[in-house]
Image 1: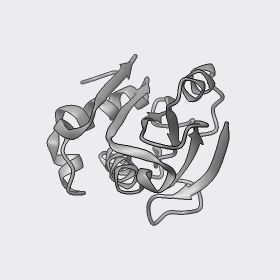
Image 2: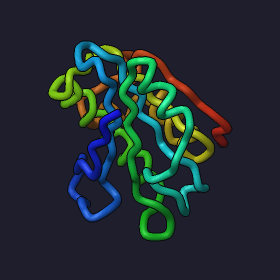
Image 3: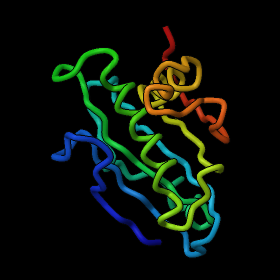
Image 4: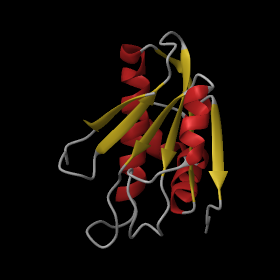
Length: 147
């Protein structure tokens, strides 16, 4: 499994707008899972170690883990906008790594589940980057806290 770290997807390249990509061995037409971490929108990072990453990569998927701005340096909807920017970036660039931009799945756990839900259910966020939630291949919401 190849891991490429700290790819900038936005203007705040020191931490907040960085992603890591875990690539499968087969580098042609693979699906990609973009995962947003939990942490109550106040903590957490793309550096979390999750068993599912290795499982998905071994099954032929790429996995993206991304940082986003957190409270209290940011406020609503900054973290959702960051996620939308990240999803747009991945769709625009995944083919450079061998992936299929039509096979992008987005999800997360806890705060990341909430952020993913906002992208799925409110077209506004992705539309700012010329994308639509209806064009995302799938959504995974784990323990999201919709309000």
